[in-house]
Length: 280
Image 1 (tube, rainbow, N blue to C red):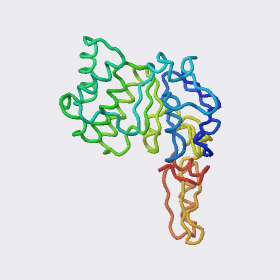
Image 2: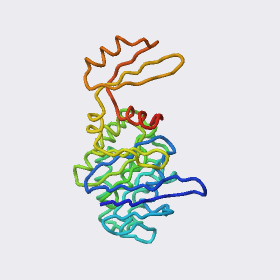
Image 3: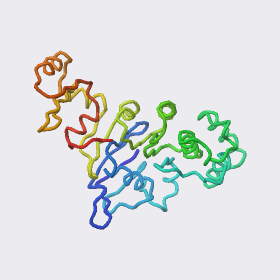
Image 4: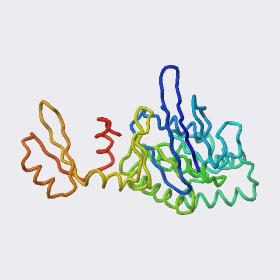
């Protein structure tokens, strides 16, 4: 579906994405996991043809991604990290504007807008200015805008950043429904729980490089099930990993650390183990 082959993106002397290759299967939900500045957004912009790779290539269904390849771009629905809504337009006007950009006939886009507003629980906001909506509702309008032309692939750059947990969970449900309907989704996030809940595959990215790739559950099970964090005044925090709670408990009780915390292992622990950096 999406083939990213040896892609590098440089800004002068700075390398934002470094010789990165990923193949994304149809109907998968892939998460790009990493801290701010890891290269996730740059990669998404190259997939959506907003940026051109310095080296390497990106293909979707065998066709090269470029600004001039409109059939490929029409396969993509893009939800950027920052709002792409028109502040002086109502929700309906913004969606009509997006539909016209894709030359969707009026008789079709009217019904489609109503269907999207219903599915995304936005009916009451139809004639409100987008700028007056809450952050969570604006995110849902951005998703509706990206879906207006019925894309095959959704690119979501930090889709739930800065919104409350209840709205975040509702958006998770919407994204799951998209995958169930046959869509392919690629999402950047630095929320560990989001990646573990939604994705059937995660790609760990740091300093522009892909260094770990797999199913969230498999990555955790290969690593262990529990982590013990010990804090020592001179050395700082130290982490140990265990497959059984009993082993973790025994280790914790024998520890001479100033403080000890036992908890279930997460993708964030694995990321920290390899990079000594936190995802968020």
